[in-house]
Image 1 (cartoon, rainbow, N blue to C red):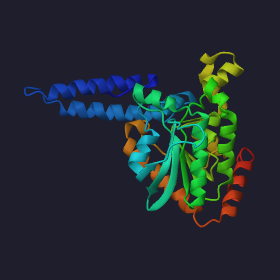
Image 2: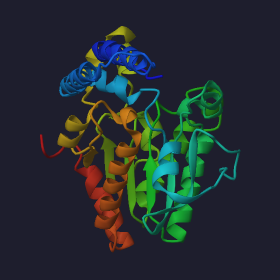
Image 3: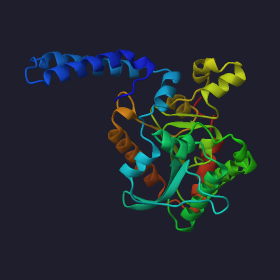
Image 4: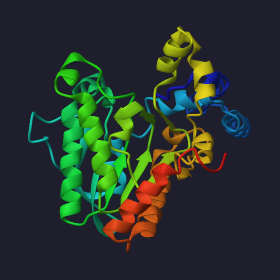
Length: 318
């Protein structure tokens, strides 16, 4: 059953009517209402296009968090081949919030990693809603070490509300683990491409996103803090998250302008959750193009390009 966001209520009503008429027409003695159905479907598609043509930052935030949006596990299943998961950080344990391993991508061997939120209640608990512990970032560092050792490109897929903020994470060195992940990304001697697929919040995202190319899906968000967290700090009121989202510049166009991201991957009308296969195909094409741009660069050139990229953030294009 489709899940509609609050601002999609007009579409939900139309689609509900369409479903009722289709059920009625499917009966043996059902009326011939083909033309009426066609008109309603056209109206629904037109309204969907109109609504998504002018989404504000808060509505994009809602789309980025949509429960039916493709998760990292969906990307693994659909755009990669021969995935072999590698678990554990070799210090404490395995963090299920970050999945990573070896895979084949369009003929090349790659190392991939990303946050997994889970869909069912059981899976969400298993993956801790995509909020990684320190061992998750240490696992990411281990994977990056492996990638450099065997000269394999790295692809990462941030999708998290932030790193796990609990006592256990702090006891095991959450800030240090994220810093090590960021440092290792910046020092990699192999091509490193990131695609923010949903929420890219706080150090929880940047710990696996210090890449040569940082891309984001059209309706993803990327920021140092969530709109709710920002509103709590600046306005002393989490209910002002909409205002915070608008002020923070967390959507693709703003991030592209300040050079925080290097490209935006278009999504189907209505968001990736309405046509996941098409959305992931577009993502695969963008990732392949980014890797092709970086192939042939020496380790020193890759590190220099990455350094220059991050130094340029906010300095040009304003």
